[in-house]
Image 1 (cartoon, rainbow, N blue to C red):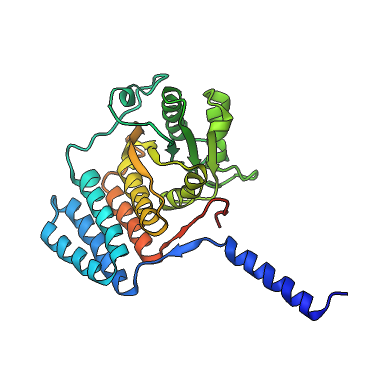
Image 2: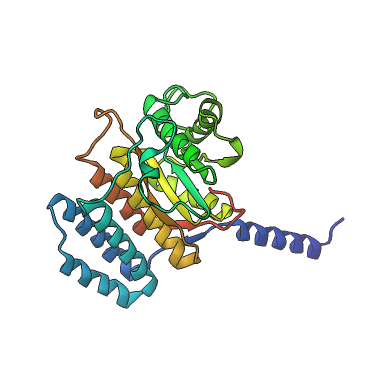
Length: 294
C-alpha cells in the first residue's frame, strides 16, 4: 500500500506534468488591450474610408509602446502588414492557372529556399465531403508542391458541416485528396484537424510549423480569402516572434479563383478585423514542439 507521502508525491508529479503540457498563453498588457482594439478599428476604417490616418495610428502605437515594448512590436508588425496587404494597390496576388505546376510562383522571383511550407486553408465540408472550392484550393496546393518538392504542405480545418456522421475533418479530407488524387507524397503532408476559423487555422498550424522547424510559409486559399488569411497568420507570426523567439516569414500567396457567388468582398475586411480583434482581446496559445492543441 502506498503511503500518504508517496501518493502526495505522485499527485504532485502528475500535476507538474499536466501543467508543463499546457501551452503558454499570450495576452497583451491590460492597459494596452483597449488601445489594440482601437488600432483594429482604425485599420478597418482605413480600408472603408479609402486611406489611413497614419499620424493618428502612429500616436496610438506610441502609447502602446510606452506601456509595453512587446505589445508595440506586435502592433507595429500587424499595422505594417495591414498597410502592405490591405491598402497597397500594388499588392501582388499569385493565381493558380489550372496547370500541373505553379507557373506564377515560378515566375515570381520569390525565395522559397530553406525550410518552407505551403499552408492550405480549409473550407466547410458538405455531408462530410469536400466542396469544389476546397478541391480547387487543394489543386493549387498540389501544383505548388510539385513545383517546390522540398516544401512540406500543411492542411487546416476541423470537423465541419452537417450530416457528417464519420466526423471527417477538412484537413483530413484535404490530405487524402492531395495524396490519392494529386500524387503528393503523404509524408510531406501534415494535417491540422481542430480549427473552425481562419484564426484557429493559424493558431493551431503554428504548433506544426514550430515542430517541423519551418521558417517560411506561403498561404494557399481562395482569392477573396487571401488577404484575410495573411493578416491573421501575420499577427500570430508576430506574437510568436516577439514572445517565443520563433520567426516565420510569410513569403507570398497562392490563390484559387473562387466562384464569385462564394466571395464576399464587402464583408471580408470586417471579418478580418473581427478575427484580428479577437487576437488582441482573447490572446493566443503559444505551442512548444510536442504539445497538442486543445
